[in-house]
Amino acid sequence: MLPLVVALTGASPLPGLPSYTASYKSWTKLNSKPIPRRSVDAHSSIKNVYVSKLPRAGRYPVGTVIVKEGRQRSGAPITLIAVMRKLRASGPHNGWQMIEWTRPNGNSRFSELARGQVCTSCHFQARKTDYIFTKRR
Image (tube, rainbow, N blue to C red; front, side):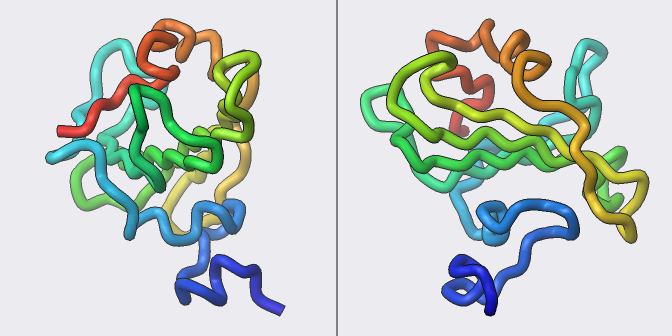
């Protein structure tokens, strides 16, 4: 039996990623053009950021999923996926779960690279904007 999200959208997640990321390309894209690699960049890549739900009164609702995809150069395969998933309305980090996956090339499965404290220690800097760095442009 197909996961519900696949059955409803016809989309499949990238290999190795959870089903809740399956249709992220159809969500609202927060950046108008790719975000360039920076010298100090935890997700060292050229990035696009997609969100399943928009914020209300400056905070994202429970159930929101944010997917940041990264490529090493323009036109290259996606080799990084960082996900923020809002599981609760409050609590540590406003209820966000953060996980990052990577793969060596476009033909490989993604494997988990980081989660938890390693992610939240950086995103703590954005706590005033619900732990999100990328704003809709």
